[in-house]
Image (cartoon, rainbow, N blue to C red; front, top):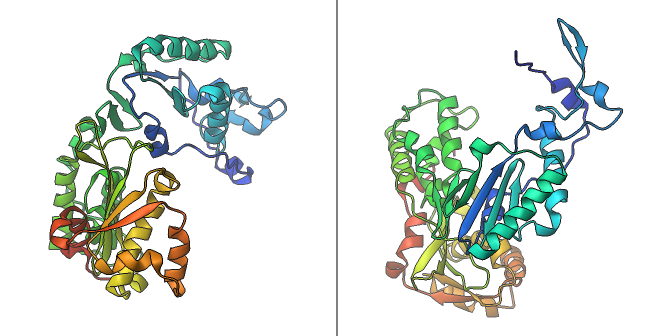
Length: 379
């Protein structure tokens, strides 16, 4: 049977956008803490499982050599299809969503902390699928496994890691010869930046190449950044899934051109393991801050990045810095400008500042002190 491809651009341009949010991959994976067993369902036909609203079928009409046709079910390509389908799935599983089921469009993941509960969870999910006439693609379903590929990442009781099958192609990635090829490579790396120490700094020369009106010049720094990212993708660490009931440790540091942070927690082996890495290049205005402001900026950026985890914690977040003058900051009363704004933001968190000399604050220090941080051509 020939495949019909319908161009929906004009219809999409006239459509009022549905702002129903799609879940973030990090938010979904954070729900899998302490999971011991997984099951993944992949729905067959996806969007075609949703009927068009009665009376709206004519809007999907398309022309063929055999005449005019219109869809009775939701076709692929409609601008509101993802939001509509996510809303549809969430409504079906709403009371058990994030309890033992997470859903991203047509990918359903059942997760259980105990094997004895797993069969009950699976039966409940299957019952609802059957009730709503939703069918699975058996070839893409995985049953009762301890390690699962979900949304491009490998999740197991040990933590989160990249899928070797997906990053192995980075080894053979050809050296870019034009901007669009750099954009493709950087886009691929962006997905895994949480796993890569010093990511924004390593990639800085490549970011510069993608700027508007920036002349094309593949320099030694570009080549070095390209190779470093390829190596980093092939040796990323396993990240543990955060546990909001345990204490968080946040190591922050700043250099002249960037901020770095590592969020960690103690795992079952009583060792501190990374939850995520953060590396942010400073804006031109931020580069003019004094060292006191830059060190505070590193803390503020890290808390904003992980606010959903660190705000309102029962145990104080241990913020580790190598700048002694930050410790009296919490007691300061006469604050102005950005310091006053930051103080208001920081007051929402339960934290303690811990001083650790720079020589022993190595991990976060590495994230912010690299040659690649320095401004290159164009900025």
